[in-house]
Length: 64
Image: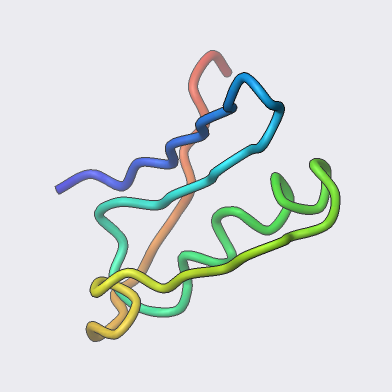
């Protein structure tokens, strides 16, 4: 499964970032800059993938 970062913005302006397809704690590395740019993190929940064995990860940006 490919890694996906999903960003949802509610009508109230709340932002939710989720990572799919990445196992282990490294998913925080994938979203760190996005979170920093958006401001204070109010809540942080780990998915079941967070507890699985980590594998090598990379972030590929489109349009470059």
